[in-house]
Image (cartoon, rainbow, N blue to C red; front, side):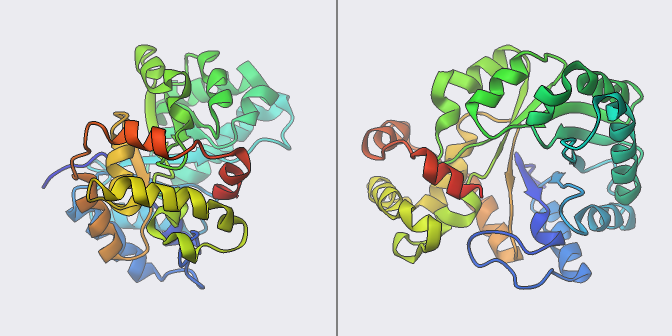
Length: 298
């Protein structure tokens, strides 16, 4: 069974989610189990979840227990925002939140525990780092890290070397991670990079003319991207994962609502990326403006 660097995001398994054709209702337990089984069969040995994903943690935990896969599949989950927490209570909040996640996951340990809200690093500073290190040292999380939304927040990671993992959005339309050579800087510091939103929450699987609402502003950008990639025989959807994998991340988190979508993602992930593709995209597709970046992740 081939092992990919893809990690299956489980938001779609616990609640309605996504820009492109999101479900009107939450998927059933049976569907979620089928998706998790298909991911494992396709060589995906990492699952990304969160207590904020509805029933996702419970469903992941039930699947791993039912199929005795706790030792074979790596799990990443998140610490909910501590915006309303007094810094004096951070240690207890972290303890309680991780305990609740472990209970739902039916496990004694997670492979990666991420700070969901990077602003918590500014709010609580070393108290938060100490609380996470304590959980790691107790053997309840193999690695600790943070999910960030911009290169500016990556600077916070450099201030806290105990954080061994960082997650950042990166796609053909959101190339900010390349500014300041962040993949190389993170690698040099020993910080593992995880990439999310490689398909821009489904936008790269849509046609430019199909975009509506706030995303309509992406039509020119997506049309230019389609044109640039066409010369390589690629589409935004087929190039998205090879492009994300080209920065050599520890993993790329992907989401899918059907087994067919999941199979297509795994297939495209092995597509060779032409060496000069990035140069062409950089030359012909302008950097995405901040308002559109905001709309992608709203």
